[in-house]
Image 1: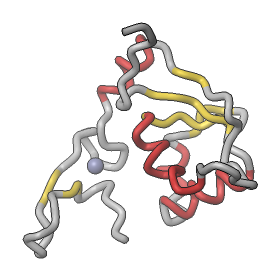
Image 2: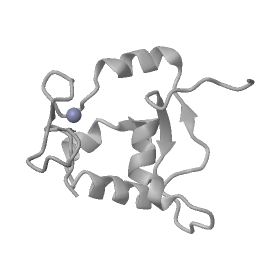
Image 3: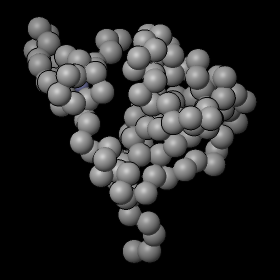
Length: 118
Ligand SMILES: [Zn+2]
């Protein structure tokens, strides 16, 4: 199969516009310290692809008038992705997610540092 092999855990840079930044701020409940960890300079923000999909997915649809970022995005190079993999959880002290179960046994485990309740 022809194509580029790209893992959704690898990172991309997107040029957020005002709307996109608003969405990002809402997603992290206005927590500037965590938002800053995504800042890549010049209004570019770096995400693992799955994070980008998770945060902005519902704003991306056919005919969307206000897109959160430019449709041209930058795919990070493999060496940068190696660095990225060292830090899995941006909020935990050691960079690792710490999964716990919620009191509701039907819930799946979630990270006590970076999980954002609904
Ligand atoms: Zn975490």
